[in-house]
Amino acid sequence: MLLAHGELARISLPIPLWLTVLVASLSVIATFAMTANRYPRNPSGVALPRADRHFCDSAVTHACLRIVGLLALDVLLIEAWIGPSAVGSNPATTWFYVWFWVGLVPASLLFGDVYRYVNPLRTLALLISGLRRTTSRPDLPNRIGYWPAVAGLLIYLVLDGVSQEGDWPRAVAVFISVYAVIHIAGGAWFGPRWFDRCETFAVYSALIARLAPFRRRPTQPLDRPLVAFVMILMGAAALDGLVHFSFWPGVDLVINPPDGDAVQSIALSTVVLVAASGAMGALYLACTWAIRQFMQSGRSAFTAFTPVLIPVVVSYAISTHLPAALFESQAGYLLVVGGGATRYGFISNTTIAIIQFIAIMSGSVLAALTTQAIATDAIKPRLRRLGQIPLAALLISYTLIGITIVSG
Image 1 (tube, rainbow, N blue to C red):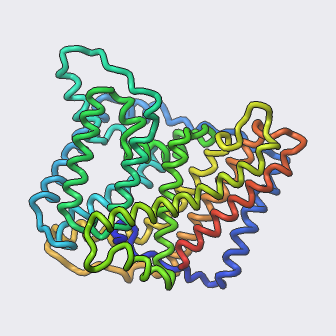
Image 2: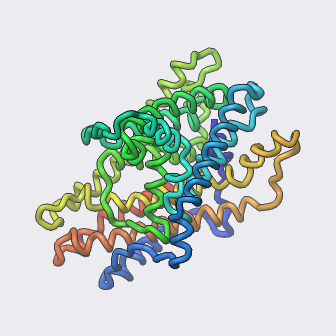
Image 3: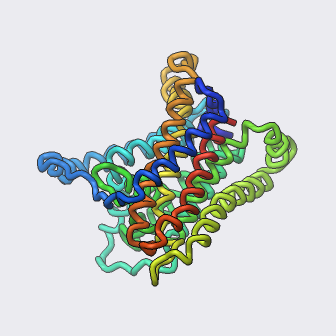
């Protein structure tokens, strides 16, 4: 089940694949080389004009966004629960997997953490907490960290990308309903910090928003649970690429046998996703282990270079979500207006492949620049160039994986 990603367009660039790989690798190396003696500053973002800041921060704007979020949740749940139950006949699956999940990426990348104000679960939790007799709230234990968000992401991606059960509209309805109850209750009890750390989609939006032009925090380290969060996203993207290889139908038959039960399918899907995520994480662990002796006293390589992962995972998301945004998203309104065929001819596979390639390369170049910014303070000056060799190898590896994802 690949509804949220569509059938990935294989790279059909006007140059051979081996040359594409070579160009990508040389681009990363060139970025490191050109900035070796010109360490980039840590940009904090572009300040909005005063009038725009007033509009964005006004109570009226926030209230309108909250109302939009509540209405969208109501429509989604009603359609998912009482709409057509047959697979492919209910627009709620497209609304959730494509319009919402895929749409979070460009929205957060362009406008920052806008989901903070649209989030209907946060709004409902705020309303419920306002009815409490006491204004005091228990503190969210630090040991919980971001792990609830990680667990929610794992469950969502299994439902979305691997398990066939996710195609069923009622499965979407159950997931959203249970998810909403858990996070409304958590938010009402612990307050806004619950959504900042425990709600999967809020954490995802805030993570992407670090690259937004008006709110940049590109070198702020990630907590270890957030690293796991990123690796699961990358593992899911890697699985999207594997479906094009000849061995995948056999793997899919094991995960989703014709006579298998749902519990077995979900369990095996989770194992496959965790294994793919672990493989992506192993590359990062190997790199940070290799440069540990080059670090300044008291600096952890694993922690210091975690921001490098954000441009990579965003580039993966853009490249894998692009076909869904162009094609699968059309079902969200075609099923409402009464049918019609999905339009594929308005853009060629070559154009899609070029955009995907540019997205992957942009993420890799930005990750290389982020690496240089971090290395300025994190690596010993006399060992800086030598210490960045494993980091360059890491980014080349992630770039090649990204190209493989969309080339098949």
